[in-house]
Length: 483
Image 1: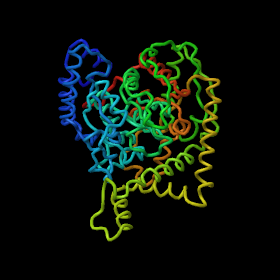
Image 2: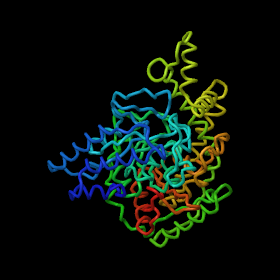
Image 3: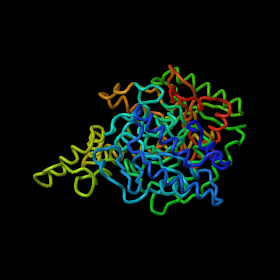
Image 4: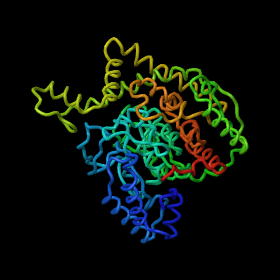
C-alpha cells in the first residue's frame, strides 16, 4: 500500500479495497521501521493518526465521500497543531505545544486527512539542505550521503521514501520546489495569498507560502484543493475563488507558449542538468507546446535582494522568541538582559543567528535606505520582468536547481555557496508567483527537477503541464532503492 499515490488511495478507499485505519497502521509501521535511516520526522503521532483514520472510515460508512477523506499525510513542523509539539526544528521551541491548529491543518483535517506526524526541516525554515535542524540533518533517500534539499527536506524525504503519499511544506525562497527537485517529487508553491499563513510560524512574512509535496501533479492538485482558500484570520490572504484543480489536468497543451529565459542557461548551471531540461522541453513540444527564448534581465540581482529582504523580515519575526513568553529559557539568568542574550544565544542555531544579525543590520538606522529599500526596488523590477514575459508566453520553464544534491556537510563552511543554490527559485517568491518543480531525470543516480512558473493564480496551468508531462514520462514513478 505504501506505493499508492493520493489519487490511488482515494479510489481504493472508495472501492473499499482497504480502510483508512489499515492504511494508516501500515504506514506508521513503515515509518517506525525505516525513518531512523533518513530522520525525516520530528514527531510521529500514532494515537492521533489512528483516531483520525477511524473517524474517516466512519464518515465513509455514513455515505460521505471525498478525495482526501482518510488519506494519510504529514505536516512540516512549522504548522501549529493543537496539543502536539510544533518545534520549527529549533531548540527554541523544542517544548512548545501549539494551543490551536493552523488554518492549513484545520482545513485538511476537515477534508478528512490523517496526520501521521510532523516532518523535519531546516531550523525556522532557514536553509537549503535540511542540515540546520536541532534534531539532526535529514538524509536523501536516493543517497544517504547527500542532502534532500531544504527547508522542507523532511517532508520531501518522507514522501520520496514512500513513508507517506504526500505532505505539507512551505516555500520562502524555493523550499518546496528545491527539495522536490533533489528527491524526484512534484512540489508546488502557490501564488502568494492563495493559501492561508495563519498558524504557520513565520520566517519572512512577505515571502512565505504553504503548498503541497507529492509524487505526482495529480496528487498536488488534490492536496492544494484542500489547502487553498480565503482566510479572514490572515491579512495577506486573497479572496479569490478556488477552481477545481483536477478538472483541467488533462487539458491539451496544443499552442501552449513556453518561455526559456536565456539567463537560466549561463555559467553556474551543471551542463548535465541543462541537457535534461532541454529533453523535457522536447517532450512538451511533442505534446503541442511552442517554445521561445525570453529574457529576465534583473534575475542577476535576485540573490542579493532576497538575502537582504528575507533576513530583515526574519529578524523582526523572531524577536518574539526572547525566553520570556514561551519557548526555551536559559537557566539562572542574572538579570533581564542576560535572560534575553543567553536564551536567544542558546536557543537559536548558527544559521538562524546569522540571518537575524544580517537582517538587524540591514534595518538599522543609516543602512535601511542603502540595503532594505534598495532590495525592495529590485524586487519590483523582477516582478516587472515577469509581467512583461507573461505578455508573450503562458509559462516559463527552466532548471529548478543549478546543481545536483550535494553531500551532507559539503557547504557548511560556505553559507554563500548554499544560498546560490536558490538562484532559480527565489524570483518566484520575490514576485509572489506560483511555481512548480517536477521530476525530469537522473544524473549519477541523483534526481533532477524542472521548474515551471505561471502568472498569478494560474496554479491549474502548472498542474496541467506537469500532469501531461508525467503521462508521457516515468521519472515520477521511480523509487529509491530499499524504499
